[in-house]
Length: 297
Image 1 (cartoon, rainbow, N blue to C red):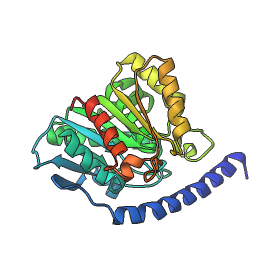
Image 2: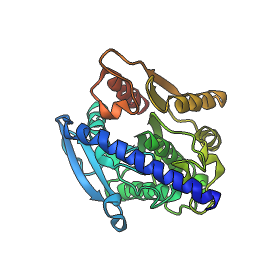
Image 3: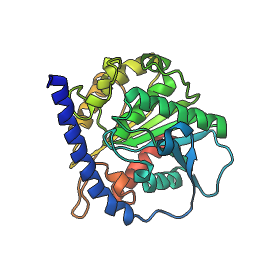
């Protein structure tokens, strides 16, 4: 067995363990969730009929359904690129819609290793182009948690920086502009030989800078313009170190960032993606308020 096969076997084992742990945590959480009232939900809208359940999205409207809208939040679930669905972030997305007064689009995408980063990026572009054509969407504020935070930042590049689409060989133009990004407990540095980074570049053609989102942000914002960025973490977040490193890279590049490192309380642990699991906590309400402020709401 060669080194690449050994690395891949190790990553596959770690992926299975990770998915089992996520299911163990998320199953009771979702069963006990109480979503807020006052939100109209359009569920399982097909944006790509070739992708089955992965090609679906939901829209959460504050109040009654809108036939058309030009601005919205674009929400991307986490799960180390290999696990999850939009259902994981539904409660958070509905709270965000109520607080912001904007529609929130909650999107599915194909999971690795059935695709790679370019494949996921292509699907996000397709979803945005669909929303532009169907509803008139022109401006988005991206948000996501963990791997979804990485993808939310990547979506900024896909919308605002055509060079990134070219580098990833993506032909689809999302047709919208990204105006802000709210990144929750993100994993911003991936290693090629480790889980989940080993799944990101099937053909060995992915730009090197996308393995380090601090460097990627510096390069892309140098070509476009800074937009409001918020980075959220907690004192018991497994991604705390990565969030700190990401902020340090932005500070070094003089890219403004609104950074919040939530402190645990006696009855509330600021664990990984806490605003997703508990959007009604005071700390989570502060997070949502930060994202709304960036969006001018």
